[in-house]
Picture: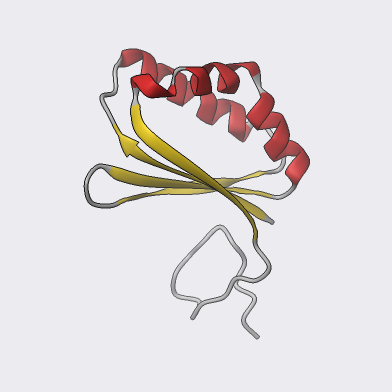
Length: 107
């Protein structure tokens, strides 16, 4: 399992942003390897959107999708800055009381 963390400083959103965001969400969901995501909001308009993927092929295909490429070209319209962290999840566990996309591997 893999995660792609898209961390950014939120700028001004417009109607085109919302339409494109909705479209990209649908495109991501169309890949069998897309497992879901979650968004965390911090101080100073900082956001971390974490997306989980079953495999790298689908993650890479989404990254190369023409609509995603177009969105990346326009990022300065909506974000003041960003950082992306791709990670391989080697283990996930908890007490069982926090539902999450990643499996609880605690034995």
